[in-house]
Length: 260
Image (cartoon, rainbow, N blue to C red; front, top):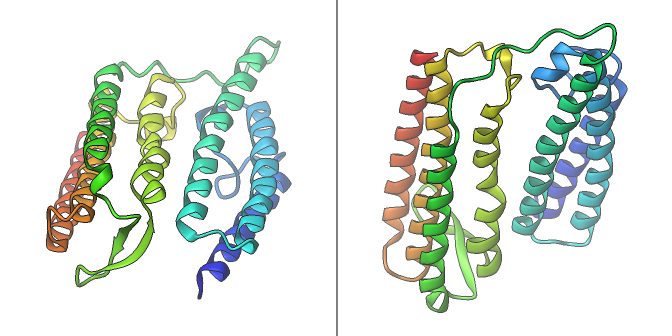
């Protein structure tokens, strides 16, 4: 499957998901739809959130399809897609929360959310933002030493097999992917953030720590990629870094499940 075919496939898959989400906007279920805590506690929140999510995904998929047919490179396509997913997450959660709060004021109030999660997210957000700042400081120091085309992916033998312009590869990718961890950590402030998980306070703290470790791990991997493209380290170090990142991540996931 070539790049254009893959991009078209992703676009059409997202279109189908959007149409299904919109079709099931009036029927709450566990399989199809945009689901957060508020949508489980309020029919109105489910209906309004999934109406928005379905239309957003359908329109956004057509935009992505246009990019695919225009021959946009897959790194740029991926960045736009990830930006859309993050926007959908944030906007969908806000719509669900607003619909729940408006229904709560009505005569027939919906199910009450659980108690507020008693975990301060500020230290975790601060660490994640400091990590991102450190990456961009390193990027600024190495910018002139980077080639116009940088390696962004490596095969199993440690050889680069995918390239992008340095603006896309080392600047835009972190800017689009990294906010996902910030958003997931920030949503811990909300009392209805995935209440189905039923974590204890220790469990939610472990979740925040997992998001922070993954965010800082991504900074580390991106930094190693910078150093490789600037000819400071060999490709072997990229492989070592990826294995170390995976080992730490799985360890943190196990810790989260143990503390939940």
